[in-house]
Image 1 (cartoon, helix red, strand yellow):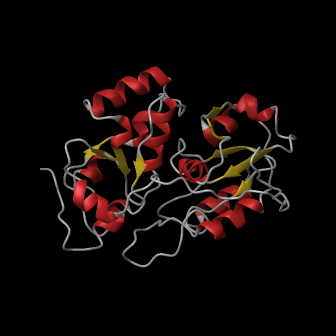
Image 2 (image 1 turned 45 degrees about the horizontal axis):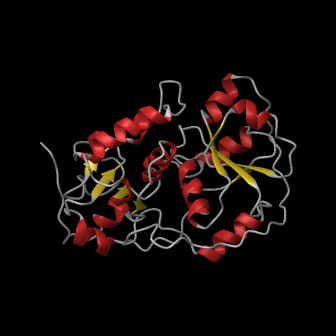
Image 3 (image 1 turned 30 degrees about the horizontal axis):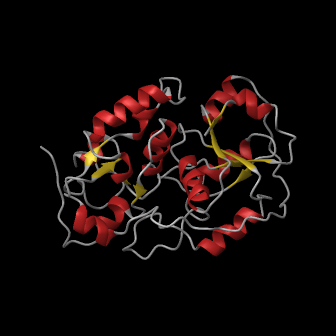
Length: 278
């Protein structure tokens, strides 16, 4: 699930390894592409969180709805990915955005997908090679096979959000979760019944992931006896929620399910209840 900078550096010329840069900024959609053009890991392709890892927005499906599977598979095949390819994804935010692509590829049946532990910042700190050249498209053989039960929709959340046998885990920063500092979505607060686990808690101070045994202890305490498979993950728009799924699986626990619409879909309907903490 994790690849070190040293391991990746040894495979930069390996045609069976494909590297994808997913750097992004929620407040500046063009920033990720500009950062990629200024310098990236040699041979890495760029994929936009807004335009390639998300589908069309309707105003009621959240800020980053899942894309059409066939369209997404076509973009993946332009990167030369097949069933035996080792894919490595990275960003410059501790995997905050890269986990979305990791989750999507796993959801659609690709088994060999890893995050670059420490991401772009560690790669640069270790003075590893960089490039400004964009690799040519390659022909892949990826055939998507969506895994049933990997997601839940808003109707499921409406019905089961306070079910004591389920844990709805929100990955946003505590200030946004509690409704005290909402800077992205038009409504502040969280889904009633949700609990908070900020995604950055999965990382060490150097930006790498905590040890699996430490993550397991923390998530078992958070779940408080609920089966890990009964976790449902949300965030602002179904992106950083994948960070907690990744961390749970890294800890050897079932990752649970993703609510792709997350808070941005939930709060788009004024009739849905909103919780805010004092």
